[in-house]
Image 1: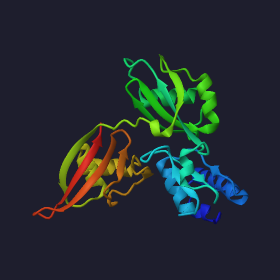
Image 2 (image 1 turned 90 degrees about the vertical axis):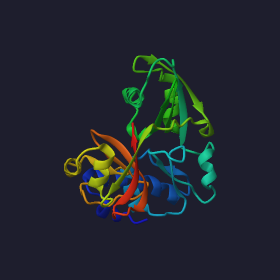
Image 3 (image 1 turned 180 degrees about the vertical axis):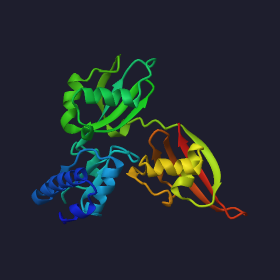
Image 4 (image 1 turned 180 degrees about the horizontal axis):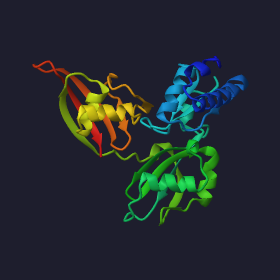
Length: 261
């Protein structure tokens, strides 16, 4: 690994601090030939880390399940392989909070309760809320503390237990399917279609720094969007460019967008 790449990749002092912290943690594991891991990273942080580490042998990105959004970077020495992600060696665990089904708790309720308990954001992965239960991922270090002390979210009492990763209940998000045709698959056009606003309004959101593609901020309205990419716009929500289906007879591009409800 080349630590000097940090200055080339970092766009802000915060980026530089984050990348230096990740480098120090993982490099220490490699030097000692022991397992090492970071905290949970956002999509943007994962992308920055990818530029720093590339496809390094023994380095895995894992958040507890296949489509997890927040993930750790985990280095396994040569005597461990990817199967160790699902054993006691894994540095993350899943906790299940159960509560009265009549209480409608949200992601925000649980995140707020965890932050209120003094837990840092990097210690918490995805939070998957369902009716009457919430499965969420934490670092192994704080799991014991939460099992002993975490008893409520909002005004609702919860019962906490540790579960195996194979038991995780990942609720499917509700989406609205939008079918449309565009002159080109550029960011402002996709946002305009997905949120049913004018292209000029979409461009204003982008130039104001409110838009991100797969977690990475983008201020270029003409940025090309690829199939499978998620776009979030602060204040509007999130959409997925589900498919790009070729040209129509009039030369426009047929697309399908999923808007998260």
